[in-house]
Length: 224
Image (cartoon, rainbow, N blue to C red; front, side):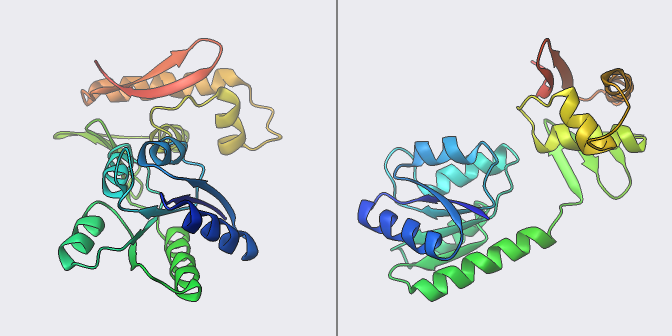
């Protein structure tokens, strides 16, 4: 499991990195909010441990941006603030848990493990981006009052694009994830399914598009 720790107290940050390393976690540490946001936006982390009071951006602001960008990485707030209003603000921003300072190592690790278990057991039924909604239960896309059914491969392609919205997904990544690493299907099949997806998105007047980036892959973006 890979954890991102954002804490502006350098001594505490060093201690936290040591604690997680001793307990078999891979952890990166940053000391300001803007750097935390940059790291977290990569989507490479299984969990976030965020201090609220940080320079640049506070932890709540960081988490609000992540949730707006559809980054669903579970997050635990560490803070000296104990007022109920601050706890509510953090949870409303999308945090999974809240641990006031000072705290024990045992409780911190227990809460992080619980947070990661919830992540493993949770898959949202709806994915949304730019007004487009993908229903994981019905394999349908919808925009405002219009909806359209997808084939299995169309659904899997769009799911990958929505989970990595704003990032380029290569044709090879689609092939490996959907058809398997040893498939004999070539990249033209990806193009066919993407073309069909575009037509269905046009039918429901979706305000997002799948753009092909020459020499790179496909990216889901909002229509300007």
